[in-house]
Length: 324
Image (tube, rainbow, N blue to C red):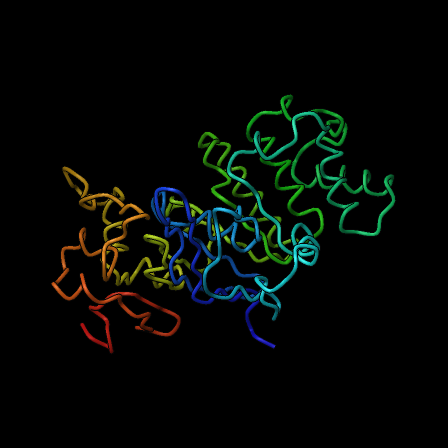
């Protein structure tokens, strides 16, 4: 048996539309051990959400298609499972918290019934027992059990996200995917939801994929980080290693763009340029048009994935064969 709960190998997901081919995820590789948390970090359009939908087998087809790679979960390649087999995995062993709870919850069904529905689908419970467990899950996420009969519009944004967490954790999944779960919330409520997720992750012993563009969230709750750019993980490392010893020019640029209260600086150091169009990615390294270290070779050669230290992987020609 593998030591990894999830092993994503060379995953590529494209969308074939009338205007051309959208290269949403490109040769993505990362691993996740039981109980571990990984942060997928990157700008909008980096392929983070598409990766999550790929793991859940929720990429809309057509136009989307997994064109290459493997998603090995508990020793099985999820891409080889039938839809009926995947339905048994989705919700029971792998669950997802979506970015906007108002659109992910059904507006005409009481929240308690929405939690109970997941339990009835995946666990051998009677309707009465499912309702009891649903109210217990609401209590775990800090919502009074008598509110189980209320509808999503009767809850605040933070409370709706708590309901989403309760639904995702109802069947005690082995893997939880959180797609920017605090984006729509104000700062105070963000902190409460993150603390709740940290506590429940420990209680349920769940592995977590945290999708975010906020390195502060990564520092708070993740064990390791995959920095994504143009659909690929350009750097993957333990959280402490990545913050103390970043290697890829894009990672260094992201960290330099964060204000440091201990330094007296007049302006931040933004990364020049914009994320490339996924329908028209540059040749070679996709980051080379924005990179201060780029050479003519960077426009021609796709950088290999190099292990520069134990568990620290970088896709950059600077580190090819143990270089600079």
